[in-house]
Image 1 (cartoon, protein in one colour):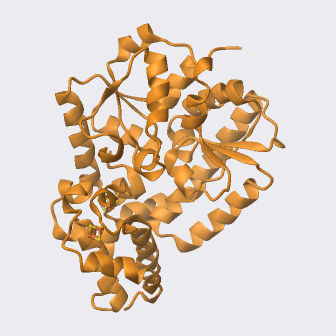
Image 2: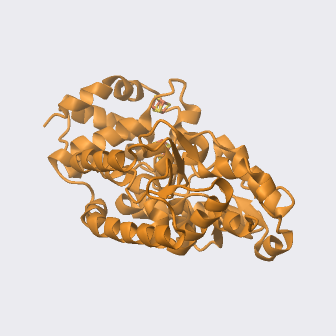
Image 3: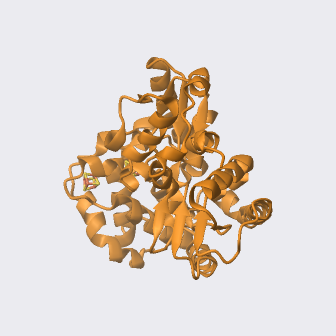
Length: 356
Ligand code: SF4
Ligand code: SF4
């Protein structure tokens, strides 16, 4: 069976299909699970063959389109700046429309309604505790990953931002990244509508989780990391407190770094709080290596995702260990699962914001 709608992305697919795999060494997934079909070339070529009807687009042949963490590292080596991530996300929709996503992805989708309900309840409770106005023109989207797994941290970040920027309303709707990563065409369309409704009348949208900042459709998105970096004077240095959990080593989340191009802002904030520049991974900024957490890789290729995280933690240990700081809910959980001490950027900011 062909994937006819994929013809919209034919050019990107062909570009990879005819390429001598220039980006092969960049891909964390095929590095963790060495298979030709998991290289960027392999994943794109398989989607291309499915588009042409040369291989079946059932899950047994096409699940490799989920073998991508959305890290954008292949772009570093690509002379064509080929859009691998959006092309593979589009391919996921077409494969899922004809078969199903990997079992772990389907399980996540099945839990989505319950997860959304929990997020809505927690956001409502936090809004009441902080006496936030429903009618504020500024909104704050922290990200479902934080409200689900780090609700107290999400609350503390909201309180800190209230001190820094004043009033806003909290957004409980999902940015749509879960549906996009799953290849859930209908769910994505419905979620986009719900988010659009929730953001009606919002003139500025602050977003913390960088995956949400990449996924959400709004004209005036500002990342929380940048907002905080623009308010350095409001942060109290706490070198003794951080020395106790340090040394701190900053991990560039792929969506914040290669995705949004934000490298200096988090480092400026951490330097202000620690009183000195924080430690770095060998590969950092544009060359930073993925944690393995993105684009539902832990739900589709769990072994590869865990292997990638273990590589990051091994490098961290080789460099002297300490505590990793990251600014992405999925990286936070994935690196912790791999055994590292990890603290979220938001937790440090919440502690550092000077009480008024
Ligand atoms: S992403 Fe670029 S370098 Fe990698 S296989 Fe495709 S065209 Fe080649
Ligand atoms: S975005 Fe990252 S995980 Fe996906 S194919 Fe490119 S290098 Fe591999």
